Amino acid sequence: MFDAKLKEAQDAIARALSDRMAGLGADRVAEGMRYATAGGKRLRGFLVLEVARLTGGDAGAAMQAACAVECIHAYSLVHDDLPCMDDDDLRRGLPTVHRKWDEATAILVGDALQAFAFELLADPVTGDGDQRSELVATLARAAGPRGMVLGQAQDIAAETAATPLTLDQITELQANKTGALLDWPVVAGAILGRADPAPLRRYARAIGLAFQIADDILDVEGDVEKTGKALRKDAGAGKATFVSLLGPGAAKRRAKALIDEATAALVPYGPEAETLKQLARFVISRDQ
Ligand code: GRG
Image (cartoon, rainbow, N blue to C red):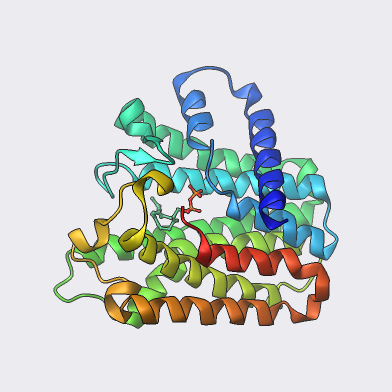
């Protein structure tokens, strides 16, 4: 049931992205944008759609916001894969954008995806003026120098730090690097449904951290074929992760406890929040 719902949302988001990008032409940057936004689990987009549904937000506006967050996410992966960052050749089972084309193209594709995300949010179909300006401001904050970019900078700095990061420092880094962009979909859905985002943000914070712990576990125990990306990179780089600091058993228990916390935060929404509960469980049971 959950798998079918996720698949339905993945297909709908793919169609919407293709529709929104249809007018971009066939130049190399536009082709790269389509390539970079193809595939993936669409967790961030799915979260926007589900929270908007739960809070009574407009479905068309939610799809627009889902496309915007998937564009920001894709940009972050394209830039993260560059040789000057994580230097990866494989993403979602295919050559990374700089391997398929070149580094200049990958930088421009990331830049273009970021700008395009805000163009989508500014479009009148995304809501009234107040909703659009709130969506733009909150996404800029989540993706920018106090959110994802800060987390990425903290991660890069940790590579050359004299001592490995502590658990608290890793938790803060991950809250910025991946947590902020998993928190935003919930905020966006609540903006569209004119709902209080506070309980839903407790849910998002818990699944954001659980997502990262699951990613660290996958890096150690995962299958390259299934994940479609290079693995065992953390240990190779001597990086402190949730798994290296807690050990695999305690890391899994922590992830499970976070899913229980996420589920508890949904109690006020009753049975309507069942899909979000299932999504929380999916985050730690996924194999890709
Ligand atoms: C370059 C500014 C800048 C930021 C990059 C998010 C990020 C910051 C880098 C990604 C590095 C990475 C692999 C982090 C682990 C967690 C993560 C975001 C994994 C990829 O997200 P998924 O699993 O990907 O949702 P799909 O392919 O399913 O969309």
